[in-house]
Each structure stands twice: as C-alpha cells, then as structure tokens.
Image 1 (tube, rainbow, N blue to C red):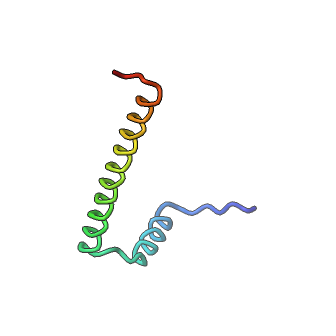
Image 2 (cartoon, rainbow, N blue to C red):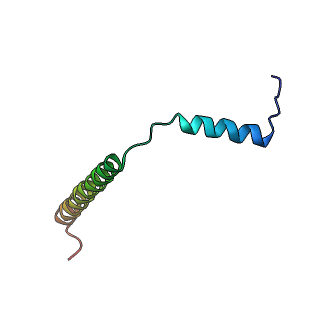
Image 3 (spheres, helix red, strand yellow):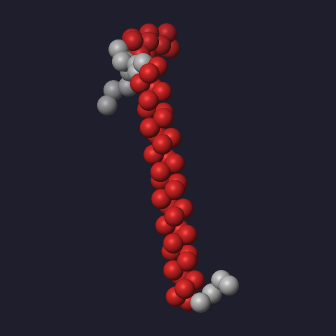
Length: 67
C-alpha cells in the first residue's frame, strides 16, 4: 500500500468540504431528540429500580434475611 502525504492545509480544506455536505438537524429536531432520550432514560431508571426492589423483596422472603 503506497502512503500518500497530504499537507495540513489540503487536509483542512477536505475536512471543511465534507463538513459542508452534512445535513445538520434543526434546533427543533435536536430538542425533540433530547427530550425523547431523557424520557426513555427516566422510564428505564424507573423500570430497573422497580425490578431491583421487587427482586430484593423476593430474595428476602425466600431466604428470610434482611430484617
């Protein structure tokens, strides 16, 4: 494989050209996505907390420990 050397100026021009091709999300899309991520994180938190509490209670009842 032949190695090509590109000077930093050309590299930065290429990076800038590729960045210009990106379709950036609007502010509204970003806010909606952020709210959805936070909502699902809270739902997951509630689910795993509840599952942990339920399993802990079940283990206490089965083994008779923790009181």
